[in-house]
Every structure is written in structure tokens, then in C-alpha cells.
Image (cartoon, rainbow, N blue to C red; front, side):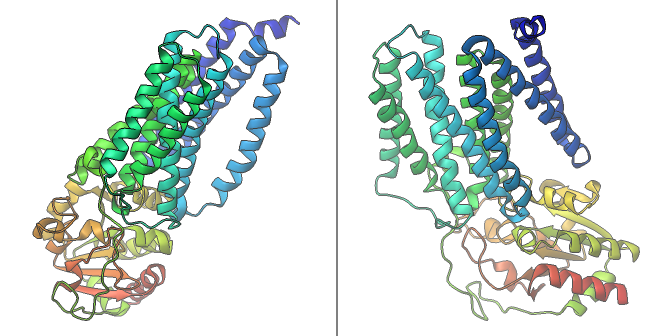
Length: 473
């Protein structure tokens, strides 16, 4: 009995929360590098486990054992769904998984806000708590439905191209106005569950869909980061309303980091976040390029043997990975090629564009999985001055982030976006399955540059063939 009273005491629960968010913060610091990321994740997971246990004790103290068993049931169901999904997801589908899991977080916040509103319906509801709950409901709902649209575009259930309605900006502004006015009316003392459902949950749900639908596939990494920030902010707001310190701390960390990352990625694309939200480029269907292509050049095809000879006798080789490497699961083959070239005295570096792939850090995660030394990875600003001194650049499915049109063609949808300046290299080898466009849906003049040769086929098999030829020389 005494043990139970102690465990359910407010001081013990508060101490457990402090330990929990301390572990969360410490675990986050481990995510700054691939060598410490796994340990950081485990530490943060331990913190979250303590937070769940503390919440169960708190619920038992204030609401009885019935609520505790409902929470335990939710944890069991969530674990049964989440663990197999996380274990079985392919690395190529990780962006979709991130969008889906992020959306679930936002949806959970919106549901909590609804439940709390119903719990206090007609009663004494502190204004501060109500304001934060309303904020959490709006932002959480936008995040949930927006993340679902992002998932659909990444999974190619929905078209990757921007989907716009006439008067899109006006519609979005009206929906946002409905949400704000409904929140003000409810906070002013009007008790109406219908207004909460229609004016808050439904209007923000439609707004979440309408905000992300006009955004093209090329902007999707920024969108995922932005929606992640929304989920964090909504969770922090709900934490304030519920007086839950772990939700406040974890939500603010996610919100702040997501906001910073969104801003950094937008700058990397030389675009503003409002411009991206207003409707980005990407996903448009490009006309198939013939032998001469739209860029007015000739496509030169090459073989694995020729590529191996160029790489083996180069002084410096730069590998620029993109989504094509992820699709082919070629990261381990790329690592073997890097080791084979290093044995021949060739300097190998990896060029990482901030938005290469389908989510922030996609290429870093893939290369870390293949044990590529972290010191070989170079960010865009660091590697671009190296290209004029590079003998050969190997581009593996990185279409849009290597497109010279971003610098040379003012009429291009991606004009002004910083790119990997691979065209400054002595020669460029592009590994692709076909001449299909990238996620931005536009032609790439790099493919028709006289210095560029195309090696068609599955990237993993092509890299393996090149490695075999390099080792045989």
C-alpha cells in the first residue's frame, strides 16, 4: 500500500517526468552524427518509456484504474502496428513512413483536444488551457491531413504534380479564417461541440489537404519537415493545456528542430517557405526526350568497363547519390566501389545535396547504413569548389539536384535553386534506368553535355559491374 501511494505521489511522478525529458534531450544530442545516432535513439526511447509509465501512474492517481487499462490497450495496439511496420519498411519507403508516423502524431493531438473539450463541456474550463487546446486541435489536424497527402504523393497513390483549384489561395484563406473565428468564439465562452467539430476539426482537415495538394514532389522534403514542426508545436500546446512537462519539452524540441530544418532546406533551394506553401514545382509530366532531347544535344551511352577505366586512372572521384540509389538499394555496392578505388590510390568523396532523396538526410542515412566513413561526405557548399579539380563525377539517380538549368535557364521552374555543380568536373557519368525525368518533372541539360556519358540499367547492378571491372584492372 505504501509503495503504491509513493509511486502515485505527485512528487515521484514529477521527478519521473524530469528524468524522462532529460533522457529525451540527451538522446537527441546523439542524433548529430551517424556513430552516435543508434545510442541516442535508444536513450530517447528509454526516456519515452519512463514518460509512459509516469503517465500511467498519474492517470491511476486521478482517474482510477479503468483509464490506465485503456492507455495500456492503446500502447499494445500501437506497438503491434508500429513495430512490424518499422521493421519491414524499405529504405526507399522511409520518407512515406516518416510522413505517416508524423501525421499520426498530429491526429492524436487533435483527438486529445476534442476529448478534453468534451470533458469540460459546459463546465469550468480555464481559458489558458482552452486556448492551447484549440491551437493544438487546429495545427494537429492540419498536420494529420497534410501528412496523409504527402504520404500519398510519395507513395504515388496521388499524382506528384501540383494539384490546384481555381482561387486556391482564397479558399485556403477562408478556411484559415473559419478556424480562427471558430476558436475565438469558443474561447469567448460559447459551448458548442458542433462548432468545435465543424469549425475546428473539419475546417482544419480540409485546410491541411488544400495546403499540401498544390505542392509538387520536388518540394516534398521541405513539406515533411514543416509538417513535423507543426506536429511538435501542437503537441507542446496540448502539453501546456494538460500540464504535462514531457509533452511540452518533446513538442518544443520537435517544433524548434523542424522549424530550423525547414528554414535551412528552403534556403538550400533558394526558395521561401511561403512560396513553397503557396504551391511548389515538381511532378509535372515531362515530354520524353529523344536522341537529341529538349536540351538540343546528343546522348552518349557508355559501358561499365569504360567507366571503370576512367575511375581507376582518376586522381579524384566524386559520387553524387540521389533517389535512384535509394530505389536500387545500391548504397552497399557504392561502398564496395569506393573501397576498390581507394585501394588504387583514388581519392573518393561523396557530394550530398540538402534535398537529395525524398526526406531530409535521406542520402546520409543510406550511406551510413552501408558504413561509408562520415568524413567522406561533403555538403553542397563544401563540395562545389571541388568539382573543377575532380576528374570524374559519378551521378547515381540525382536528377534535379544536378540540373544546370537551375543556374543557366531563367525560365526553368527550378531556376535559382543551388545545385551540385557536377558539370564543372572533367567528365560526368550518369547512372539511370532510362531518360525519365526526376521528381520535378523537367528535362536535365546535363545529360546532353559533351562531357557526360550515360550508363543505363539498374544502379546496383551497374555499380557492381563497375567495381568488378575496377578490381580486374
